Image 1 (tube, rainbow, N blue to C red):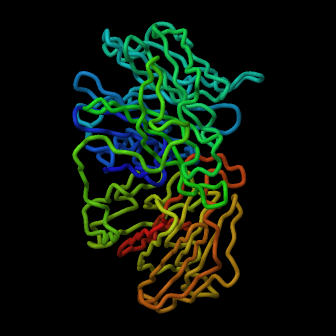
Image 2 (image 1 turned 90 degrees about the horizontal axis):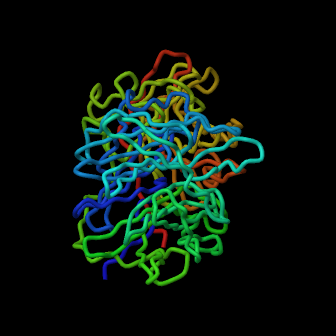
Image 3 (image 1 turned 180 degrees about the horizontal axis):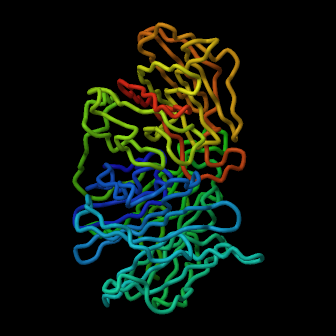
Length: 528
């Protein structure tokens, strides 16, 4: 029997919005401050997935300059009607304090791979927008409403308003149709129809350990909605030792053969610690309908299983990502992201020196504006990453190297630099909850090194950096570090992303000194 092994989208891939069109399945996931915006994954069998599209790929479509960490693109919603794909997005420009400065946009495409239209602004009342296509041809926008007022529930409920494709705007009154269950923090609406019912699939309980998904229904789109008396549909609230924590924020598809599958957020903790540096991931489980019209997980219970039966579909595999990228292609692979800005010739080139990734140094790892970083997700707890950089710094303001990066407040950085006492050297920088440090004895002289090889190994919570002058003889740089620091939950951070492995360069003097990276190697090891 073919099985699905959860999570199916590993590493930071949250807020899955799932869709079937014919024999093809798609999942859109959030990207927050990372560029390009939105990842759309494709599958034919619900087992094997690959990225097929990243719709927000130009600065004109997505401006993330100055967007706070864990802001940016939240919870995309992917739908399809009459030959057109619809993508709703929220861009969060501010998220601290009581306010949420955010804007909801609509994009469309006739081909999932694009081109996608320029984002069309619709409203700003709350996040998690979803566009529902009713059987009578009308279209409705749903989103949660954010209420900042003192004494009010910040998650003010799910609101509904009609969208006019002809006028390209929202029309008519705004109606509040649901306020959620006792779990609270009601968000992430998904609407669908079945057997004369309008169903609302809602995320509840917050994005952390109390996360859940709840189903409600009504005979009228405007309500009133009744909630499943045996809510929630999926959660790990009462299963603190379950391998897939934070289960919630769900979406639903029916296969060609009438099987039903639920996508959901999940997180794999570091063993024995309530920390998840891989970020929130995406899983899939089969569900079934009861005689009275509610959904249940196949096999019973509320907690998702790590291994479940796959649907009766022919296997359809995709080529795996290469472990070694020699940067021989004309453009970056889809596994890579940049931070808040697109990859453009001002600061990044794959052609100036063929076979190398050239990065021109710009702002620091603390910046929300013009960083020069190319990064990929960390996807397993046992792995290693390696690169080789050619860099000739002339000042301590010039740096380039390998980073494990959560955000500006929490990251580790093995960098090549220069100063008047050490000369050219390789040193380790750590930033913990915003506090900069250079660990004692974490410097290696690199005078005369034309090529600096840099490596990091991860064995669950233990992180160790290394360097070499020839790629064969390695020496440790700095102490063992704690991967748990690079987590959403670390010391009350309340972030929403995950750990990235990055290549980066800085020139705080403003001369844009360049560094040439020969390759990036990323190898995962068995975690069973």
